[in-house]
Length: 347
Image (cartoon, rainbow, N blue to C red; front, top):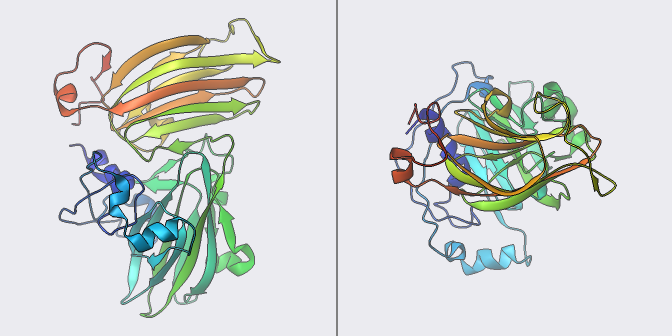
């Protein structure tokens, strides 16, 4: 299995060995190890994470939940648990980190449903900023120096995507993400110090830039009169079927085929694949320049597959697709409409 897959699979199924930490998956632990850049502040060079887990999607996911947790999820009380130095959260609730020893390289990744924003609210913060502690929110995810959403796709410049508690204090007590993923970096030297935060989600009527929580699904990406790029990322090799593409609609009337084609101008859909997290660094696999009603299907054996809509802002653009994770035998013996040359070279 390629290094990127070993690093990324945890994102979708990481740390569900404790009950109540995933809405979809049951998992078991395997031996854990991780490393980061020797520079204590350079979390963008994070390369390994402590656990990979094996998903068993045939089970009812709510068998994972205790009766108490089910009541909490139903809204009877706020779900609470301790936050670990390296963690992954997909549920709303209140989470507390307390250092039991100096913790210098910590990060927590948050993911919600595609149609949701994430809000991180500081309830209590007790860290020593003057002594080298820090607590930073990043609007998106960073893995091995690559960002999602990419700098080209995110509405804010990279520097504004970091919110440093030691600079802003509680003047920015609540921070909302621009998509369904966010993360925090933190360092706490003194045992007993730490923080408590609450994670909430809010509806996002037009999701733009999504990381899928699951290896199988169906989604419609809509970009309504916005000059922006929107990416849907699936961190698995998948078979993807595009059933509908609507481009260049204005006042309900379909325009003629754009003369600009798919050369970076106008409105179009592209399929990308690669071995990293940043869509802008991936290889273009196919461009869809004109509206059509499919299906069009392709098997893509890349660690990360992205459906990306490029929009001029003049029209309402829409693409509907479904995807499923490729089986091992499909990766070993691809046939039909498959992309494998560069995607499978690292498998």
